[in-house]
Image 1 (tube, one colour):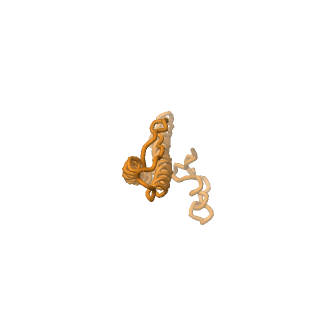
Image 2 (cartoon, helix red, strand yellow; image 1 turned 120 degrees about the vertical axis):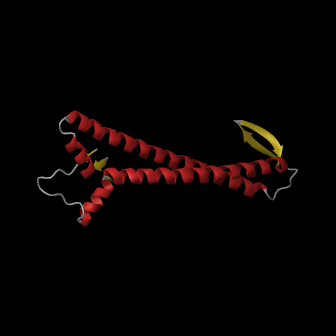
Length: 154
């Protein structure tokens, strides 16, 4: 849930001639905000998944790097277990690890950009997470005056 306060109240006040438009505007702001937050969450989930794969690849590399290059080893490729030698598998796994690292860096950059957009949107429409609002209330920053609307809680 998010709180939309003063700026959204102004939008509502400006379009008070048509209350339906004001409600639709507020809903559209919240829909876009929730969509943006969802995208950030997807980036975080993908980065976490790739980090797990990176750890698995590093473990395999550390395990087989000191073995005899002619020794047999098995590799799972597309759900099929294939017999190869350490000499064949090690470079492929190292190459995959480099690709995973590059993908994590790229996604991290995209995440920073998307998070900056979300922060800017929050600032523009004065959107505050409920947890953040509670912290402000405890600190005395979020006091509301009698007779004044505190905004919309979504």
